[in-house]
Amino acid sequence: MNIAAAIAALTEMGIETDTNPASVKAKSRDFFWYSPVLKDRLDHVVADFVATPKNEAEVISILKTCYAHDVPVTTRGTGTGNYGQAMPLAGGCILHLNQMNAVKEIHPGRVICEPGVLLKDLDAACNETGQEIRMYSSTWATATIGGFIAGGSGGIGSVRWGSLRDPGNIIRLRVATMEAEPRTLEITGDDLHRVSHAYGTNGIITEIEIPLAPAYEWKGIFLAFSDFDEALQYSYDLASCDGLLIKLATVFEAPIAKDYFQRVAPHVEDADALVALMIAPHAMPGWETFTKGYPGARTIYVQGETDWPRDPGLVFEYGWNHTTLRALKVDPSITYLQIAYGTDDPIALVKAVKERLSPEVLQHIEVTRMNGKVAMGGLTLVKFTTEERLDEIIAIHEQMGAMNFNPHRYTLEEGGRQSVDERQLDFKREADPKGLLNPGKMIAWDDPNWSYDRMYAWPGLQPKTAAE
Image (cartoon, rainbow, N blue to C red; front, side):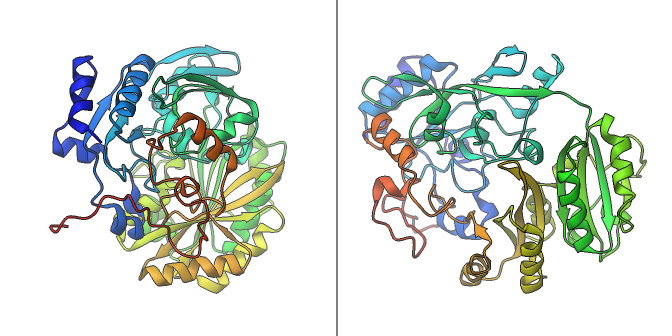
């Protein structure tokens, strides 16, 4: 690895590089610290420099130069990922795509853009044509579309449109390879699975085409329930109601709302479960009729209609992983899990896990859609004590039939289904022959016989210094 030669070559080309230790460290970090396990493993990790391209041509120049000098490249949007996806485990170059933020074309039903555009700005541009993006993360104000596709799985809108990787939710990706002479490839159809949610380990996304939906002035709503089971059933039934257009249905076990949602807390009791919704304006009369069938439902907030002394802001910024962030601000010992309760009988499984583990583990349920059926996923709040106990809690979930997508691991496989994705591995062999793209994140590349019986520790991880 010849860092100095790579920096000199890029500087001579007029490409923006940053070697300031403070800013390089800041741009080397994502939200890995949501996990105390990852914080312990990755807190010392830092790149050697940052390169910020303005266009695809500069991306290719950076990849070609770093390839020639054996410099690892880790792509970064704005660093809102939670699993260490954007942490440069081997140092090297952070490829910062925030200046590639153009919304290129908006057509009926689709938009073409660069990867560095913020989700919020992309949505706003589409809104001007009466359209909106189908789904986005709760960090939409600061997260990029490229980061969402490379590291995300779903979000606000998944109750209607399913997961990001479901067929139809991405139309096309343009991807640059890291070779002696980098190529740009147009990826469509089934091949999209090779590069979406791959953490930038096997290609750099330089252009994105995704579908759009009609835009609405969604109504954010909070409902309180004295009974968690009724809140759970209500949310499942609402998502199953085909005539009602909704964009969010989230359930919070007590005392999440009272303890962690400061602007909601004055309006709920300690024992109240909370449901957060986004309802299309034209669906409001139907929603009101539907809700009358649930005697325990108390509407405590409707956006634009309820006047609280302290406005709660956007309702969706209480769900998905903003729930964890809000809890962490109150109690730094909180961490979280990602649990799939599935579609077969998710309510019964959620209730069984709650009975077994509450209050050490508090249920935060996102209602989604999977293969045409209503599904439930948990971004579960956990009171962290030790890493060993966290592993026990994960094992209990799995023994009960609740699949864990472990957010306390930095590799693709351990954060997924604990298995090799041959499509992604094959594409890495083709597009990144030296293994320089985001090294350490794909176990199958480094140790294809790994047994997954313990946390993977990449051998090339930067060592901690004595001071650390």
